[in-house]
Length: 315
Image (cartoon, rainbow, N blue to C red; front, top):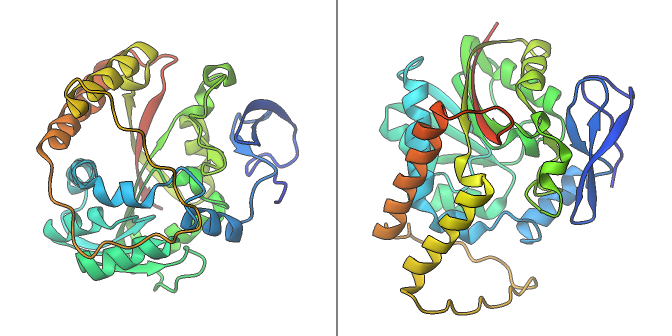
């Protein structure tokens, strides 16, 4: 475990924000950044991920090909407005589905992921180029990428300022950084009372638009666009209704069988082929996507949990 201070303000002071899973997130009194302290070291986080002791379910992420492909195509549509081809780096490439879709769009993709089983699946099953490690440990040529992309990775980064400076160094002049993250720091800590929704300690930092602009400014990026999508399905009433509907369709009116207890001692076995597409899950993802990205783009966003999609250029 290690204690940390605000990456923007240092030891200016903090206030309690939210506690879960035996960890505490605090908010900086100066800029409002929300972060976990004390926190597991980077090496300990790698052990927790690969031991399935966090909420990152390796098997589920590999099976959830329908959602991964949908999200990849949405992101690539956005990237395509600014860059149609070139060398693309994904940080936190997980099972590798985004890289596979990027290759199909004409990019030359490379991925980085800290989790060994994901890397083996992406390279051996999907045939994409992925390196195991972090930005700090994987050797990549400076100025060699046209696009750097990551989705829901920023909150996992142990050293966000260092990581963004490394991303900047990997991009050619004028290269594109596109990433997606949440707006937790814009919301009061009471919003999460009694929940484990912040996924501590999987998520070490939580930002809002203000803090993202600080991050870009201090690491050499010019923000071109910030798109905001209200997460309507995370509101209490719609979320409860969706869970009921999912339960009805998946069990056909019958009680769900109890889930088997996970054997933490058993190592994760990497699949040898891509899971087949499932019609019900495909339809569910399309509905979720319409609510999130289409309705969420026009819904009232004041005080709502939201996804922020940032497009920035290396200065």
